[in-house]
Length: 129
Image 1: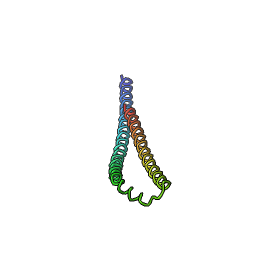
Image 2: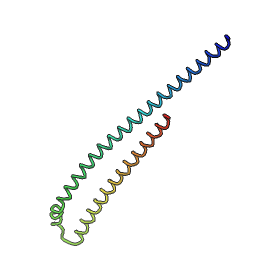
Image 3: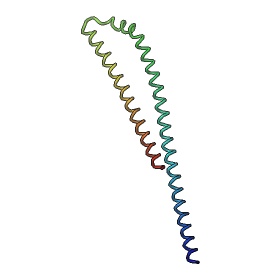
């Protein structure tokens, strides 16, 4: 009977250690999830701020475009030949392409960040299971 009691006490201690290890792993998983959540929220806040900034830049550019016909007309007053006009038009097309490329690059960066953070958050939740 003494041996049964000793075995039972040893088994209880083993289970207590396993429970403590499991609780430690759970706490680490919760901490990891909280860290990823904080990183995701920080990134999301930065993206919202960038989006607001780009939106204001877009609105400013739209205002410039509305004012462009008058501005372009005054810029064109110095154009004396078809070649000068073509060069001016080429410059405007190039500027438009640069702005389009920058916008597309930002969209791709935003999509990549969102995909990376979503995958990392999913991995963290999978690790919690």
